[in-house]
Image (cartoon, rainbow, N blue to C red; front, side, top):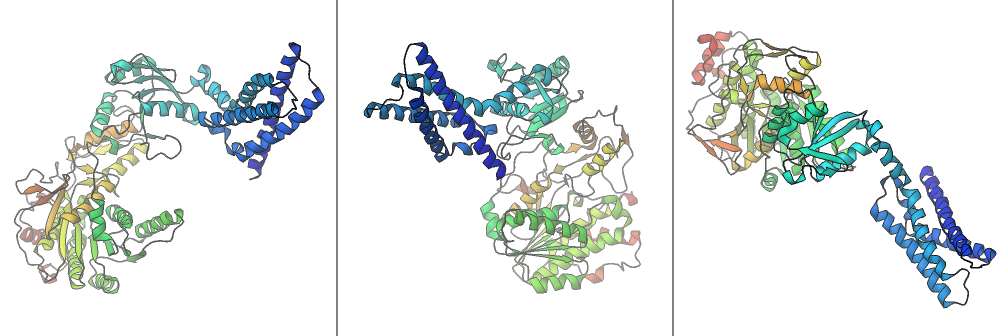
Length: 610
């Protein structure tokens, strides 16, 4: 507050000097041409005029303008006030018989005053411009080529000049519009087409590339990134204008920017009709998918959200995140948020949750998902993935929940491992459940999600950070990938389409070769694969497949109203399931577990039996 007051008085003082100088200059000019005047009277009246002008400037909030951000509109306002006040003085001395200075003097006073009033305000902008435009100083920055010669490019160039911390020196712009080639934007030449990028990176020895094209689709982004694969350059892009608050923001290209995926459109009104004012239970609510489900359901005005998880740290983290989100908005939490620590395979714990809170919507995300670990910890895979799912379905039915969605996996399809077979059995338990109730059951099947706990992306990032090598199990291994928010958005959307006992399959786009993924991640880190960071082929792990299957091209898979969600309409095999059918998990060996799964999941083809 004190600084603002000090600045106000500073600019008032500078305005007094500016107006005084305009009068002095006018009087000296008149004197040179032989005009006589009474200096004392002029001084006295000019003092009153200056005080009145300062008050008028204050009245029109001229002193609230921050010079750092002053622009044409502010300069125009100041000049207009100056002109109108001088015009008023001319009118007054034309009406009354008192002329303290010749009216013609205002032909000199008015323009000089407007120039001086504006000049000291834009001095900061002018000095900063010359400072950042100086070629010697700018050449210290990293040589940068900008992709795209539109409005976004202009924003990037202004941000580079404004923010010297970026340490960037634009050497040229590339654009596919031939009419623009040879022209300049803010003094930077448009060199040629985007396809020629390698030529110009070599010619100008560029170390950085900025994508300044709004909403450049992933396919073109991947193509551009592939073109630069032999160049050791850092690639950044302009954050979408709508996401930027005050200034355009540059961010390093991420691996999800290279996924060949279209933007997902949601029917938010339909989702809100299902979730609004409901009590929502998310099992595994602290995990990667579960926590994102918690985040997204909060947008649909639930009555209560229950986070149920066996791992207290994850559950606590998402609880604190939700509370901080609403604290920042300075509003109270608009729903009741509960956190319960427990396991879904403990039936009594699950029943206590349902009995106390009576959730009407259930998202079952609690599961073990790591293939090699579950090959060794097969009892836990059955306990959580099969028994846990059965427990939650049974209690959702008993306590009259409306709808339950199970999070499944592509590894449930023709599985060669215990984890995948246990998830397929969970799907079959869901489909075969004959509840005499209105409980709507569905499962949603999708592939890997980026940056989930224990997934390949964080693992590769750690290996790159450690200086390598990056370990890939097989040169030809492929996986489907989707971002966590995308997957959860489609899970919510699938609730609109379910008729009960459905299995939905998400369109994961094109499968990604893990070897190429590793190379791209190394390049995104500003390093060179096989030179700075080695890639080792370590062999397939127990139960691991080269290619995962989602069955989108299967004859029993059909599109829903949302082109990214498919419904499996294959007739399902009814199975009976009860606790008594499961072998004694305290003394069962792996072969017995495999035999149990083979009886229930006919598509299970364990590698151990090959």
